[in-house]
Image (tube, rainbow, N blue to C red; front, side):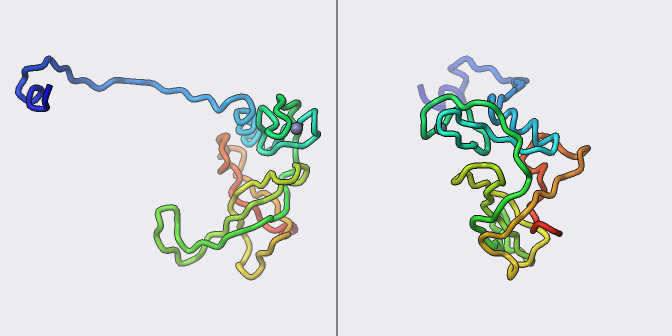
Length: 158
Ligand SMILES: [Zn+2]
């Protein structure tokens, strides 16, 4: 069959626009994580074998190969592990004012559970590895169960 067979009507065709509805499940661990974000809380999940607090929560411990245990509520504060100052946006357009993005170790989570998010209310020369930061949340009415329910992390004490 060639394209011309379709174009010239030698093949039966039908046209239509399906009204497909989609639902998507984030799964047990990330589903709970997102639901807790809507309530203004961060949760991790404990591995009962090695004792690590997995953050963001996941359903199994990748080191022990066992199912993760209970969810644990964590503080919404942490420490900057590394950061980047970006003068381009997500569409690679030049920005007048840079955006700051950091990898944050959330207080109460185990090591190597870095969490990437925006840093705000801070100037470039104030950024440092080891800086203590705290989440700045959207208002409860504006939260929707997404990582953007946290607007950014700001230096603790601001
Ligand atoms: Zn483990």
